[in-house]
Length: 295
Image 1 (tube, rainbow, N blue to C red):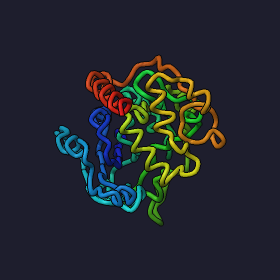
Image 2: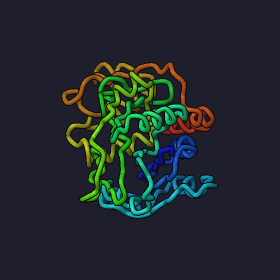
Image 3: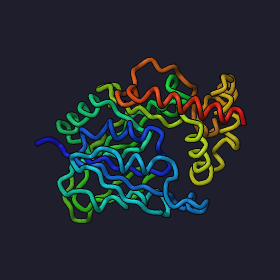
């Protein structure tokens, strides 16, 4: 019997490649569980739900097989937001696949990975990230591709729940007999099976500005460049690649706490959903870039 996969997503102001993300996983999902809404940081700024096109995309996305469940709310932090969709997880689900709204997988890679899970009975999987930067032609190397930066797939049992969102950690209920822990790390997955995720996480200026505002306040804090968006990201998209040399790459973390993170030219192929949406995605990128650079 084929494995049953639930994709679990939390999203707020995440319309950038959300439609493409859903398109890429829908054929392979038994369930798609989504929590939408702001954590406390954004609530304190007056938000009660996404104000971009996130909700329009979620509620208009074709769902002929009734796979999608959407929970709206306001959450203290991302741990709580992850837990909000877990009551809807069906008891016969084998794995939950932690999925951000800017992460896309190729269909053939999902199929390959599901086959690996069936054959090897892994209980957790780390995935290599090809994190695109400033557009669709470059990605961040070095630090961004360290082993198991992104833990994404977990064996689940009835009544399982999220312990933490960062790092992603699923726990089984007490008394449930579980498989022995068996982890597939991101390097092995890439080197042996050629599977990675295509992460459109530093592409659009608005996306990067909002991400860095939250990260600097709640995650990286003093480890983050104090004015990353204006002094690193915007100059880079304007053509000043020298900022990479002065900052030892383009990742927002201070070089002293991470290795280099220089951009590298992307020579592969994008997932089908991105290729299909590329004209509109590039149009949005150009419009946003022009607006920020003219300010």
